[in-house]
Length: 182
Image 1 (spheres, one colour):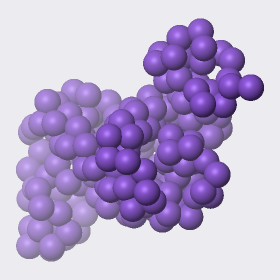
Image 2 (tube, helix red, strand yellow):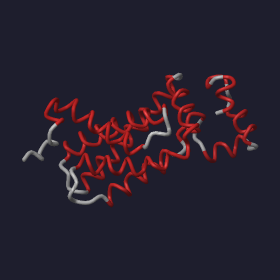
Image 3 (cartoon, one colour):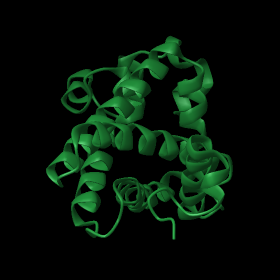
Image 4 (cartoon, one colour):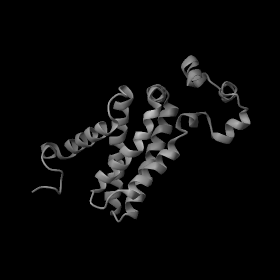
C-alpha cells in the first residue's frame, strides 16, 4: 500500500512489491497470481467465513436475513483492517483494472452464497436474488464503514438492509417486512 500511495498503482511493479516486502519475485508468485491479488488476498477466507456463518444460521430466518447475518458476522473480522480499508477502497476506485477485479470477487461471493442457499432448500431464483441483494447491501455497508470505522458494522448492515427493503418495497418497508404482515 505504501508503494501504491507513493507512486500510484500502475507505476508499481511486482519486483518492487517483492523487494519492499523482503521477498523474491518467485516467492511473490507463490502467494499471488498477479499484482491485483495483493488487494484481494483475504477474499477466499472471507467467503469461507460467510459460508460457515450461513450454514450455521437458524432455520427460522428468511433467506435475506440469514445471508445478512452471515455477512455481518464475517464482516466483523474486517475491523482489524480499519485504516487499510479506506486506502484500499480509494485505490480500487482509482483504477479500472482493480474495479473490475472487485466486481469479479463480489460476483463470485454472490454465486457462492446462492449455492449455499440452494443447499439450504431455497429455490434457485430466490437464492440468486437474495445473494445479489445481500452482496449489494454488504458493499454499501462496508463502504460506509470505511468512511468511519468507529461506527458499529452490524448497525451499518441493519441500515443497509432497511434501505434495501425500502428501495424494493417502498413505504411498505417502513411497516412489517414482506411476508411478516399481521
